[in-house]
Amino acid sequence: MHVKTLFYKILCSVQLVWLGLNAFLFVWYYQVYDHRRFFYTRKLLGPALNLARAPAACLNFNCMLILLPVCRNLLSFLRGSSACCSTRIRRQLDRNLTFHKMVAWMIALHTAIHTVAHLFNVEWLVNAKSKTHSDNYSIALSELEDNPSLGQTYVNFVSKSYKNPEGALYVAFTYLAGITGVVITLCLILIITSSTKTIRRSYFEVFWFTHHLFVIFFIGLAIHGAGRIVRGQTNADLLIHVPEKCWKNITFWGTKGNCPFPQFAGNPPMTWKWIVGPMFLYLCERLVRFWRSQQKVVITKVVTHPFKTIELQMKKKGFKMEVGQYIFVKCPKLSNLEWHPFTLTSAPEEDFFSIHIRIVGDWTEGLFKACGCDKTEFQEAWKLPKVAVDGPFGTASEDVFSYEVVMLVGAGIGVTPFASILKSVWYKYCNDSTRLKLKKIYFYWLCRDTHAFEWFADLLQSLETQMQQKDNADFLSYNIYLTGWDESQATHFTVHHDEETDVITGLKQKTLYGRPNWENEFKTIASQHPNTRIGVFLCGPEALADTLNKQSIANSDAGPRGVHFIFNKENF
Image 1 (cartoon, rainbow, N blue to C red):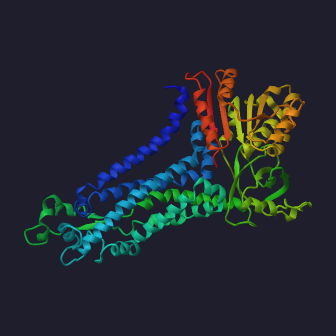
Image 2 (cartoon, helix red, strand yellow):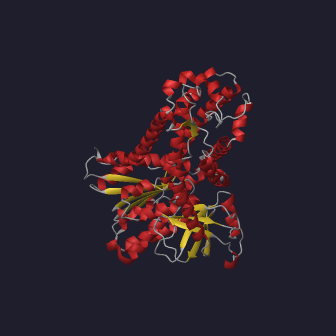
């Protein structure tokens, strides 16, 4: 096995196990309903019975999984526990939202199969009950009703004779399985359609509120099978009424010397057994979040940065963080329900924690105004809005100090996780640099507007100065790329290109224009650090993630002692 593909084999192994379990459950439960218990049910419904029940089992399995990737406190606990969570497993945990989305699409797929199959089932059952467009055998089976004096039990759960489509509507809106099926399907459609990237970015509130329909979804799911409408012969009755022998003599059932009437019973509800554990864990998760959100948070400072970016510096009793972690923030003045994620930009060594917020939507605009950032006069501290904080939660960036060499790549506001890392590096160098495993940082920042550089330049200048004082200027190599500019800016850059410091950032390292040639960058770094595991950390768009991912694989050596690029991406 090539070592450079080992990581992807591990990554794919989790997905393959999950897909394999889905396939196994589908095939297994498809065959379960080929059992002789359901001989007469299949006579009524044909293969649609199996095609409805097999995806139902897969739905149970995936609905059991869907909540686990969003139990942030559980994942942070596992991530921080080296005893039960190796580095490779932690990288799997960092892809929790990707797995959450995959499970959601699998739920959508099996819901579609389950729903379509049951639409056929209901149509055939209604037709058999109303004696229209149905065969004589199905009509005869549908005439069986609960009648203790005759020893009859029903197999067709449709109790009244209506023709379609009235009969189908009758089933959908008068039976528990029909009502809950309609409700949970509508909830699922709303949740999925509001989870698209466009909705999440432009109308986050819509995404946030519709996602909480999951509560109704799970309640409906838990009671969906309580009506026990899928019926089969009882195991005891199979010894008395043998369907393979008796099915042809249906008109003589219950008469002397012939087969007795078959005894049918509904399947007991099983879904609740699959989902009760994850639901309990998620309830505990929400209780922990609620408890932490009630703890007092004090905004100690608000800093307005260029390009409509503000910095909130806060304090909270008992708050402990690691580099690259993130928190969820709620401002009750704006909304009592909305929580928004932000990466921490402060270092663990500081006596406060901070976040940088770019003003891009209604909620951030409201916070901008609530903090008085739209006013020219000084804002008194007591006038600042109250906020609630949940977290911190772990991310891939926590592992940055596990490598000797790292590449940090930030795009636009995606630079924020690396502010925390670079600050922490600065503090560690000030205290005791000999204990720091990290020996070399390659930092790349891609931004399309010159104003966005300003708030981050001070940190880079401090780190640049500190490294020079420690006589280790080569520790940090940073490359800042401006990906967008106009003609007047280009002229200005050209005129001042020969100055000692950069005209945009004020740093000694000059700003580059365009985009990096990632293939050359990876090859250069690989040649300078043979036999080294190099961590690649990105906070940026999916297109850039795909590029860095491919380059990490392509530039990793096949042998165990060569260069290996380990790709990590921020997900929250």
